[in-house]
Structure formats: structure tokens, C-alpha cells
Length: 191
Image (cartoon, rainbow, N blue to C red; front, side):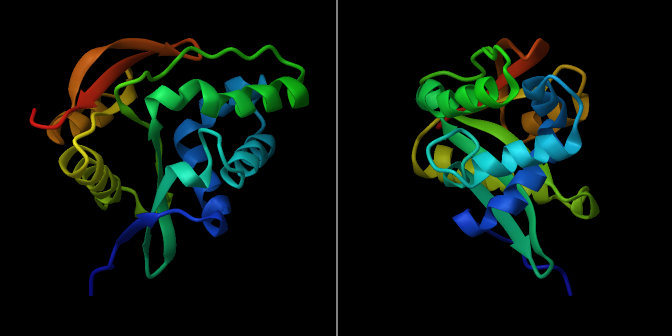
């Protein structure tokens, strides 16, 4: 019998799982935040933010996918117009805890809901869960609300880009995030 996948808005009780899955997708970026490659510290930092409100990694900005095994994936999405307000607590915490000047490039902007991070449990990768989460967001934000969804894809990850293109995303430009060249893709209502 196939697993039943339920996609739902995350709650505070999901914060630890969310941190685990977001870290899978953004480990190198969190290391750049920390200034060192430290998996325990990276997980602690993300756990701190996923359990807090009003920041870009908050459970408030996440959806989770769960099946009989529990939560198997998480996706983080927020209004690009809110980037600076949502990022400010992250900047302050990193500057305070790690005594580091932290001024990352803007990864999104007003006019799009930004898919910041998508992570799937390693044992559940390759089963279409990431695609289902993305399709869910396309239906929720683009088809139902008439919004634009945007995301960045690492230029060295052609498989991810192929998936996004197959789902209807189109390249709209290039950005740099923590020094990494990224391609900016969007999907819009009626396009």
C-alpha cells in the first residue's frame, strides 16, 4: 500500500523536524553564516530560528509533508517584500553569537513569494515528495492566490533546474547568495 502524503502548514511542534530538513538543503549556507563547518552548531542555529516567530526560517513560513513515518520533508516560503524584516533577527543573532559581520545579499524581492529552502529526508528522496511539495505551493500561491513564486537554483545543480523548469518555472535573472552564483527562477499566474 503506498504512503499517504499529507502537506500541511507547519506548527511550533514541527520546529525540530523543520530544522533537520532545512539544514539538508542549506548546510553550506549555514556554514557560511557561522564562519565554520560545524554540523552541531548549524543544527542548533536553525533549531533556534525554526522555533521562533517572525524570522525567515520560522515554522510560520513553512509547510511540512508527512506520511505514516512522520514528517519527511519541509519547505520554507515567505513574501519577498518581507525579506529584510524577516532576516533582521537572523543577522542580529549571528552577529551577537558568532561576533561576525553578516550582510548577505538579497535573495528575493517584493513581488514574489520566495521558496527559500526545501529539504526531504534522505530515505524519502527520489520518491517525488519534493515535486509534490512544489506543486502544492504552485497550486496554493500561484493558482489560488494569483501570486508569483520564486526560487534560486545553484548553477552547478542542473537536475534541480530541470525539475523547476518541468514544473513551469522560468529563468528571470541571476543572483549571488553568500558568494555563490545562483539562477533566479519564477512561476507566475497565467503564465
